[in-house]
Length: 210
Image (cartoon, helix red, strand yellow):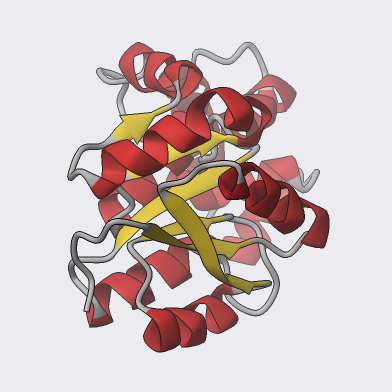
């Protein structure tokens, strides 16, 4: 069962073998932790978690078959005490909030792994939470922003795909005037100067993905 132990058992989940190897190499230098299993996608992660019930799971977000957010939710629904650290290249505040709401206990950026990972593993194992400073800054910066509605997120995703208002209206079975109103609302909420700028902000913050 999951619980305190002298050695922290770690499961690494990433579709890139080199990332998994790098993490295993870093963890192997520590006397108080050990990688017990690896997985290349969310489905494998759930299987490996059931088999090994690690203390800490290191979870990538973008993976084939089952992504990290779905995997976090699946593991946490079956094992409510699971302690999961998200490792990602995405610093967006919306993506981070989704991961934390799904049950992740920490959100770290891959480019800071050597500085932050080992401390975060110990912190989360001890019952605390950890968030990369850059992500914390993004969360604080946008804490009081008006969130986009689900309909506005759909419009923004189609804008990012290069669709004009008329095409968006046809796709969503609505009027072009309604889409124009949603676009204006999106620009205002995101503080964007134009449609392209809105798409860039949406991708950077993790509101949408392509």
